[in-house]
Image 1 (cartoon, rainbow, N blue to C red):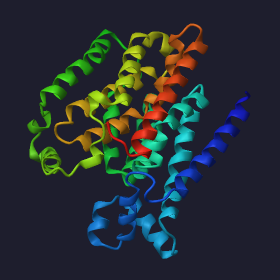
Image 2: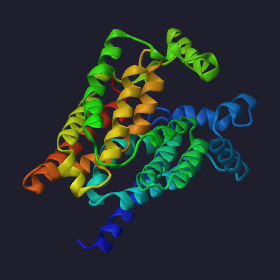
Image 3: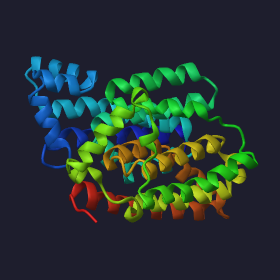
Image 4: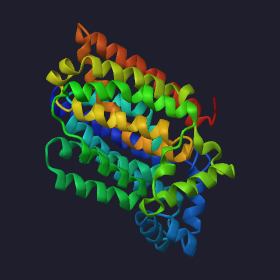
Length: 333
């Protein structure tokens, strides 16, 4: 297909995605009912304080026009989906393949469930792109813009610890050891955040511990990390990409920074789980969004390459089945 035709297909798919996200009902997906309650109580002082500025102002504006919840869903979809598709178009050599990976899981999780995270994570992809290109000021602006939609976007500043230079032996050693060490923390129930002083945010982590002790996390805590298909299959992706990183980098230059960010995602998910499964999951999902590009890049580890495309599409099929059962049918493992 010509590049122009691929762009047209992506735009048409994007329109369908926006329509689906905007027309769903409050009972169709998890979190939607909570958004309905927040939208209807936006004039409450407590609600305005807890929600991000974007949600408050958009809700006020729609309420002034006499529009309802679906208008809110449409606004967020109009923001998140075009931004993300633009990032995919900018960063991926095979945008349709990357789009299939994105739709297979994160479209349902973010654009149909966590609509505020959807915009923040879409902006994060641009931040990753500009950080990899050495334009950190622009990357900073995208992260700050993301915090208007979800406060967790502040964690995005961690990417400035990384560069996109080819992985040396030290970086390779660190990346190989990250997951085994994190699983030790995970299964041992070690809480490294207890060492953080209260003045540096330790009080926030204490609040998360309290909520978990009170049993307030509920369904939001998601599937346990060691039983989560999405996490386990991404661990396979991580080590496969790390082992073949030289070949992958030759064909896709952003692989080094993507591997470092994916390692950070695992650190958040496995070391913060004992503090709060919700916090651990949200941060993991925020950083793990970059895996859509690694799933595209991994095809170059296969000979011939079309075998890699087949493998990636098989993974997409498994991901969409998993996300349908978990996030659409509300089933738990």
